[in-house]
Amino acid sequence: MDLCAEQLLANLPDNGPNAVRATRVCPQFRRIAGRLPIVGRKNVAFNADRLFNRFVTFPRHLRRVVTSFDAFHVVDHSYAQLIHDLPSERSGAYCYDLDAFRCLVDPPADPRPRWFRALARRTLAGLQKAARVFLISRQTGADLLRHGLVDPAKLVHAPLGVAAEFTPGEVRFQGPATLLHVGSCIPRKRIDVLLEVVAEVRRRNPEVQLIKVGGTWTTEQRDQIARLGLANAIDHRQNLSRADLAEQYRAASVVLVPSEYEGFGLPVIEGLACGAVVITSDIPALREAGGPAAIYAPVADVVTWADLVQRALTEPNFPLPRAERLTWSSQFTWSAHAATIASTYHRLLTK
Image (cartoon, rainbow, N blue to C red):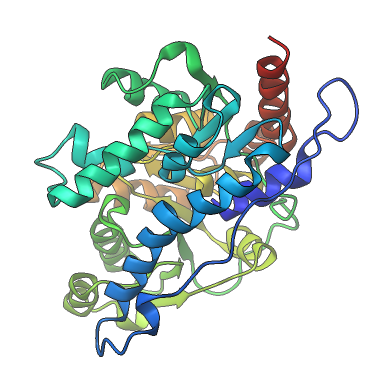
């Protein structure tokens, strides 16, 4: 979300018929619970402060500046509750996925307490009030419509782009083959499948290593790493700059994206833009991101994943040619993303 805000501000047109003068509105995060001596419960305090800021501090700040702008763009749909305090006919929100509303549309899969569902309903109601809902993917739009959450006339497709750092550079592989995963360790990323695939590939190629960028291992994942004997086969890296992340994509033998659900798949297009071979789950959103340039495997089918990795490592003609991977990824630009959003607000203001 921070990347999306940064790239939007940097790429909005500053001249021409859709020129925009944009201001980042983000009040200082207030720590209240975090200052209390709650020993051993720092996460609880931080989450309490997050909720207080989202539902109290941020709306209060917006009410003070609401007359200063012609239109308002909420970069993260999980903050759509802010639209209750904005002129909704001139406001929009960018929607990544349905995670924030999972407890409402599929309660058995995401059971939550009553207070949490009430906050989710308020956020959803804010999204529904927006004049436009921008979509990270057509699949996210289909999910919203399938659950009857948003008026289809409000939907605008505005996929993410590839930042300037993600370029192919020189083809180079050093040392043993490396598998790369970029992302968090939340359940839908299927890190359990990732680890099983790495273990299976290493049974065939013991020198293969996994580079894991981002996320924090859960207790279950640490146990799985120990059980599979992968402790010395994983290099876990955090807080990389975009330039350093691009280097990881360029150096990787194969990029793996085993998620069971995604709104889009930024690592797919970033990896392809760096010339990497990408193997990803065969789900609609990732198909949308990878098109013909990625390799697809059924979700959680460890044997098929391992077979595809093995082929990618040993058969030079198996993946789509590098030039075609680069051509596919080149269509995803932040300038196109920003132009779509700018033109949409201009049309709203001139109706």
